Length: 217
View 1 (cartoon, rainbow, N blue to C red):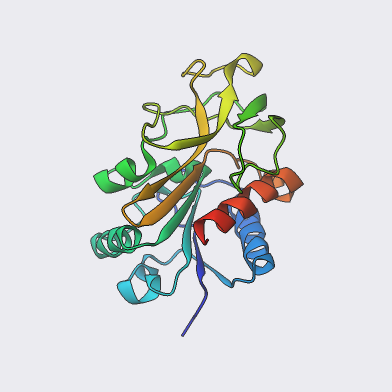
View 2: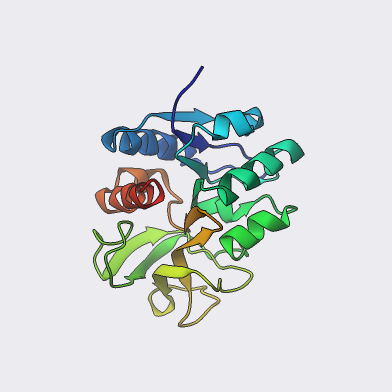
């Protein structure tokens, strides 16, 4: 029986990012550095009450489309409402389009992106572990996601500077990373992490490590 307490879920039912193996490897390494074990799976059968009860955090790593069974959705919702944690990375904003709870959990959904290009992330001041290691203006190349709406009722950790790239759709209020509590659980989403090399970048790895730290505190 596995006792891994970071469950990294990589199933896709739509577009599949080439960066998923790199992301899974990086998150496994970061979990180990935090003293936790990790399991990478694409099996929707992992989403049972018994398995989730042993999870400190579930990572949805660029999952796309409907990737959970009805029974898995029920178990996952109970887990999150009961004190579980979710780290949703990049294309996870495009997962479970038919499940209203998941959209409400993230606060919005993916709505396209311009071409991959350099841009600037504006990091919110403060001591949140996911952004404390980052510079106030974080220059990087990524796939800059637009959303169906700007999420409300969340703590925004980083925004896109739409003047620094082409194709933004939200003006001065374009969140890229945010967190919130869901009943007794915690959720953190980051829209960053498109390319394989992102997961070898020290600042992005610090961003993910800080997210895991906050989610498992």
